[in-house]
Structure formats: structure tokens, C-alpha cells
Image 1 (tube, helix red, strand yellow):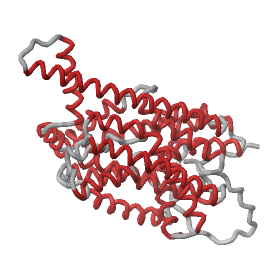
Image 2 (tube, helix red, strand yellow):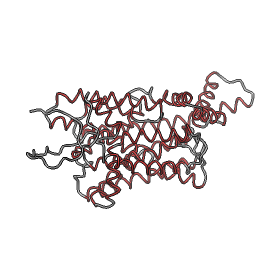
Image 3 (cartoon, rainbow, N blue to C red):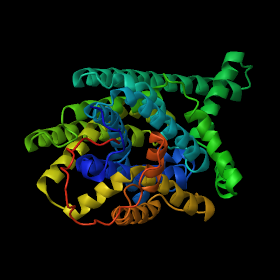
Image 4 (cartoon, rainbow, N blue to C red):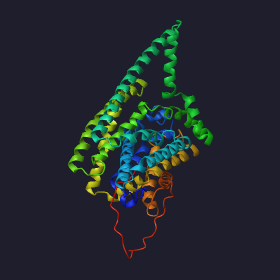
Length: 449
């Protein structure tokens, strides 16, 4: 007999997944901070703002190896796993007929939240693209782990091929630009095609290598009040949110979502594999990921952050970040299995249980610091990590404290209430003590994301 399908309760949560999600939501800030603090292209090019020498360069290199793509990858992987957890819970309760309605309502509310988050706080947010991908992923929930990994591998291969073509094309564009510019300087009359070659390359450099005037304009928009802040974000959102469904940018998300669904189905994310398995998984991921990242950085530094060198380095981006993300999953499982640092792992699990609230709160804090207080473009690259550390500390401390008194984070509660069309209980009621006629506890079930 079917039972009412409702949000997962605290005793039903999978702590391993909450722990990984907590690590991911904190780690994402280590990369997002550059987009809040500087001109957008500084994310991958420290020569534009924030410093590219000494400690600032080492800060960039460390973040590139440890965080870039990996924390977003882990967050995305767990989002994909959440789809299977939600549908699995529904099927266990005999509520299969309800699941599509609940799932799509849940996803559409996330999409709306993502749009609001993007325009009001953070142009680089991931909730909107997650929801767009989520609208497609429901149809893949019953595919075997092998099939899901094959799909992820095909998308990865296509991204590598696309990045290789873009790198080659970038080099060709530069050659055409140099040739046309040389003719122009000599006084020769240029053809329409040659004029187009110059204009195309200059348009590329306009965003990737901004001049002082562009940096000042961006700073003024980010520190000029609420309306100008939104205008600054709209310039970037025109690129990110207008990308079609077949855009390679969305494939980047789909790869990890498919992988997350597969890793959940094989018991990897729930800690059901042996320590030897996780040790081998971590070793393989690091053995592949670190050398590829070092190769990327060598190409970038040899070309000193030129457009072409960054394009060629991007060809190794997907396999490197995927390998490192898998290694982080394995290392996290090994830490949990060892029983070490239990105070920290519990705090991180609480942070992950409130991942949506903590993710948006990071945007609120960063908007206050860099937009309202006017620190945008004022700090060096290494200094922005003092802000990161402060936010990490706040979220690690406040999450377990909040969950002592409330069942969900504020945004999690609102999202669940809207998803189920029922106001969910929020506060944790004091334990009244043992009942006179106790009823057996329900079986532990998987959680939803």
C-alpha cells in the first residue's frame, strides 16, 4: 500500500553524501570568489587584476589544481545522485505515480530560484543550469551504471574534441589577425575579409584581455548600487543563460550528473565499497588528474596566459577535473571510514545538509563585501581568500547550530514546502519522552538531494 510521499527526515539522511556536499559547497566558493572580487575573466587569468606574481601567482596555481572544476564537479555529481535518491524513495513507498509531478515541480522551483539568484546576487550561479539539465535527466534515472558512464564518456570525448578545435581555431585567428595588422601598418588596402579578421580578434580580446577603461567600467557597475550591480550581471548572463540545450557548457554539467547517478547505483557514494577500492580509486584519480593539471599550467605559463595558450590548455580540462573529482570522492569515503576528525566531518555534513542555503548565503556575503562595501577590484588575489576563510568558518559553525533547532535550512524548508504544496514542519519539537504505546520506527530510506 502506498504511503504519503514527503521530504526526507533527519534520521533517514545519508551522512556520507551530506559530508561530500558540505565539502563541495565550501570548495565552490574558493573559485567563485574571483568572479565576485574581480573582472569576470580574472577567474582564469590573474594578469588582468589581483596580481600574477609571487604569492598571487602561487595562489592561482594552487586553486587551479585543488579547486577549479573539482568542487563544482563534486556538487554536480551529487545533484545527479539526488535524482536517483528521490525516485528511489518514491518507488520504495509505492508512490511511483507521484514522482514525476513532484520531481518536475521541484526542478522548476529550482530553476526559478536560480534565475533570481543570478540576477540579484551572482552571475556564475549553477542552480539554473542544474535545473535545465534536471528537466532532461529524469528520463535517464533507470539506465544502468555502465550505460550512464558510457554517456558521460561520450560527452567528455566530444568536449575534448570541441576544445581541441577551438584551440586550433584560436591559433588560426591570431595568425590571420597578425597578417592583416601587418598589412594595415604598411599602408596596404585591406580586403573585407582581412578587416573582419582584425575585428574578430579584437572582439575576442575585448572580454578576455580588457583594457583599463573596461576594468573601470566593470568596477563602477559593481560598486555603483543595486541597479548597476544587476546591469553588470546581465552582461554575463546574456552568455550563460542564453546557451542552448546542446551547448558544450551544459555537457560539462551532464557528464558529472550521469557519473553521480552511476556512482550512487554502484554504492560508491554511500560508502558501501571496501577501503581498498576507495584507495585504488583515489590513487588512479590523482595519478591521472595531477599530471594533466600540471601540463595545463605549463602550457598556460609558457604562453603567459595568452588566449591561444589558455585554449590549448583547456583541451585537458575535462579529463583532469573528472579524475580529480573521483579522487576527492574516494578520499572523502576513506576519511569517513577511518572515523578520524569526527567533529569536523559532522560539521561538514551539517553544512551539506543546508547546502542550498549556504550556497546562496555565500553570494549574499560576497555581494555585501565586494559590491556594497566597495572592495571589488581592490584586493590582491591571495587576500580574497581571507574572505573565503571567514565565510567557511561562519558556515561550518552556524550549520550544526541551526540544525539543533530546525529540521531544514531556511531555503531547503521553502523549497520542500513549495515542492510538496504543503507547509513543512520547521522547528524541531522537544522530545516528549517515551510513548505509552510506542510504535515501531519506519525503516531507514535513502534521502533526496
